[in-house]
Amino acid sequence: MIKSQLSKLRKLGLIGYFKHMFLENRSDSQTIFKNTFWLFLAEGVNKGLMFFLTILIARSLGASGYGQFAFALSFTSLFAVFADFGLSTLTIREVARNKSLVKKYVDNISVIKMFLGVITFGLIFLIVQFMGKSSSVKTLVYLFGVYVILNSFSEFFRSVFRAFEKMQYEAVSKIVQGLVLFFVGLLVLHLGATYVVLAYVVGSFFGLIASLFYLRKFSWVKLELDFGIWKSVLKESWPFALGSIFVSVYFSIDSLMISFFKGDTELGYYALAYGIMTGFYIIPSLLSNVYFPKLSYAYKHDGKKLKKLIWSFIKKISLIVFLLVLLLFFCSKPFFDFVYGDGFNNSVGVFKLLIFVLVFKFYGFPFGFLLSASDGQKKRLFAQGTTALFNIITNLIFIPWLGIMGAAITTLMSEFLLVCLYVFFTRKMVFK
Image (tube, rainbow, N blue to C red):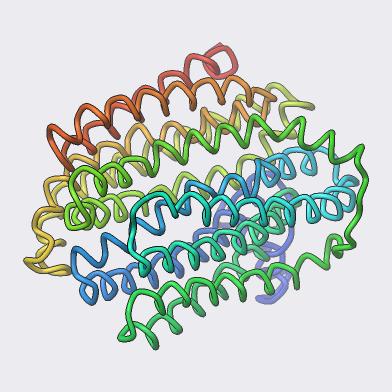
């Protein structure tokens, strides 16, 4: 392997070798390596920047202020699915199978998403009026609503890059967004939470501009009203959308319930621990983005290759999550003491419990994305809906009783249930 790469380097030269390995799609293994590299580079930069910015935000706002900030973000995240309606996932699957669909999908779905964006912001504005929050918290919600809608458009355009397995363009647009958010956030941090959320909006706007710049390589946006296409894509996308609603519910409902039952300070403790833990979700998420187009294509064209790809995915997940859980469990207390000081000591115990959520969450990705790639979105929808209902019921029981530890226990049980259902539905494709 090493000899062959050295031979290519001598033959192509440094620039030619870089182009061959990191910009072109030459083989399955090379394309997986290339796209994994670019997505991990983008997320490494973004998560690194956001890690330091979140520390500063938490220290600046304190537990109560950070709880309000976390509430606004969690609340608006529940509505992100309405702005996308599963259209990005559908675009990846269908365009990966048939590249000639890209213009029809981009032109028509862009119009659909404009309508969805207006509806989404209207829902956010309307519902928050009945939640008894202060005017300052409502302002945070409105701004995060704009951020969610802009992000939704960026994610749709990036789905085209994923369908063509050109993740280098996605990486650049995400890095641009992350850098703008970080530096604008630093500049306005001393002005308070409202200006910090404005930094999120500005960053997402620049990310959208960068995504549009690279979209030209595949299809420029020319708005089109083809109701036949609209009917087709909405018919196929609704299970993805409803599934995303269920995911959003059990991803965010615990934070909303903690805010209601225990107050913003307790939410601040939980949100910090939960936010750090969920930051690691990006690892299986990025691998899923790399494998999903290939799984979608293999399902239609090569059954043996499909099984080979999914086991490759599972093996990578197993190695990563084993090492990660060991590292986080033994380093959590020194990490919190050093980074956040005494103000967030109550977050440590919750974080230690949430670490084990990573095991079930990581394994859920390959089995869940296999369902989506193999036209099993309705089975995935059933699994997500069942888990969301279980999560709501157990949160209502455990949060008033055990507080933030109850929310952590519920999250652990919910992720275990979800991965069990995914494995049940995909067992014939994976294990036979």
